[in-house]
Image 1 (tube, rainbow, N blue to C red):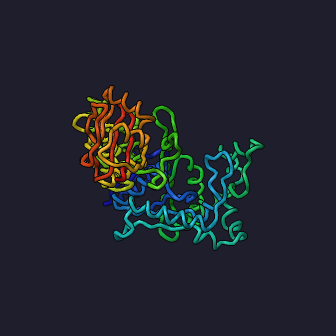
Image 2: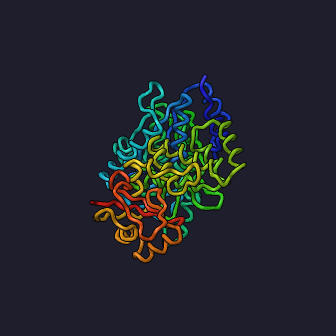
Image 3: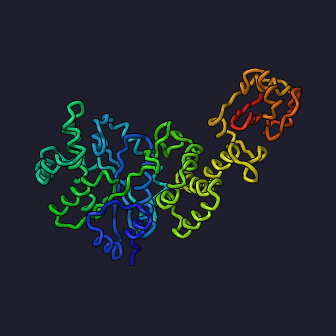
Length: 430
């Protein structure tokens, strides 16, 4: 007896549409289902918008079924026009190969590629799309697709009706290539389910129909929601742009902070979608959160769980400690004495940071001005007089106070709090 993935998906809010829900639910209970999600590697990293399909594949494998991740090395050279208002830039094979290699490392955080019968597979559709000739493609694939049906799709019609946008034959052919992918995976791996975002419904229907027409086989399509926040914003977008899974693009600290900033109305839904926590535990977390929402305990746990999943438990711990150092209070506040070199490295990228060469002991006002934490010694004196200067957890109360070498963290760092929301890290070279 196999676990019913369809039922789990439904309870966790990650089904938007399914081509044949009753039948797919039945199949999940009686056999190991192979399902795939495609990722066009148009960038060298996935972003949080990819997390729902990634979690879908991960749940599939956890419940005993087999996931396939398809890197669109072939279709990615064209670009999926679904939901796009203009033509994508075309990428070279070299860039595509590099992007796929980077994405593969990220997939390994979600999928096990060496666990027996339901080991995950990563395949590249360039391997088979590059081998079919144009004439064969028109004869064997193109004849099964109606131009009328393709033109009826909203995103294609909107592009055609706008003379400044338009759509090329290249992008127009994308649905045929995606259907051919599904049929190839059906024949080679027994793949019967394709999953994607709800903007993919037309392409999924086309693939299911193409398999039925050419093989007589039974296949399914299932779409998952494209998320908006409760305030109507696009999920995964910030003022700085997309939130990437690669820490070189979005640091682990900023990734963690993205989830910390989740609105209360979104927390429960995001727990269900982006963590493996049992539903009963999520209900308990939300109930406790509602008692003291100002503590943002639910957001902190959500941030920790997602950062641990995408990066590592250590990365999640470091990001959490950095966040508590900057914004914690009372018992939750992290002390400077607890900071290791790795957290200091995180701080150096997230708050103003400067290096100075100076002899100690030295007046606090001189260090703050020399390190650009304050514009001048005068500003430093005013802040001290107002009680707004703390260096490495030591409150500075006298304008003439001096810094001794013993105060430095790891023999060289000063973490300065200036007022309530200003921070500065100074590295001192003696």
